[in-house]
Length: 246
Image (cartoon, rainbow, N blue to C red; front, side, top):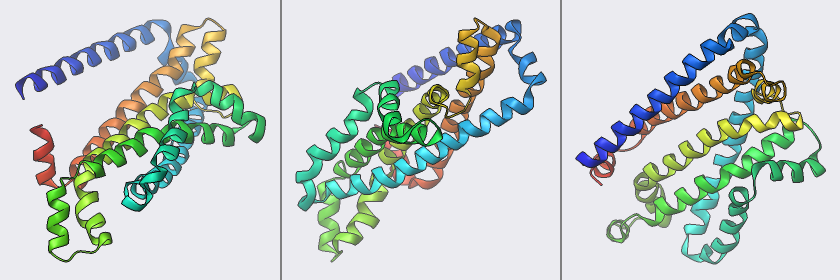
């Protein structure tokens, strides 16, 4: 437990040092001056970025969670290989390649970006949903059956509450990754903060690039923090204590 706390402390220290270094560099390169002078444009791009992340993440949750539950049912286990390999494509194929392939069918615009982000978000959510449900101790399931619970009652009252930590961890990971990946949407006309990042790269303007990169970084950290608080609220306290001691 002490070793785990030390590792977490070291990771936080490194993270804080990197963030402070980026902020100092951004101040020197004039990123904050650009943001202040063009706050309306930056807020507009931030709104586009959040919209892409929100729509694609919500669609992934609505798809991955039911699929994860579906293939953990004994009668549907035979579909696990097909579903998991389909979801694996979103992680094994580079994001930019997925966007290029989808663009040939959906064209240029935000709809292609949303589809690409949805596809790359499936695997963490799906895998964690399956892992969480599969990790529920068989004795708990047997106890539920002994109490006369139906399969639906066992799923909603035993399996999902005990798997909630793993499920939310998958959602948390996928959304944070989504925030960074959404910057690629600019390349296919999807908008977002990638506009500033890639414009800065093409113009060799570090200040402009960081004016887009810093909000993305801070947004990812903020979303991770908010979901972390949500986890503590929604996960049963007994399960929290159990996972903290692992």
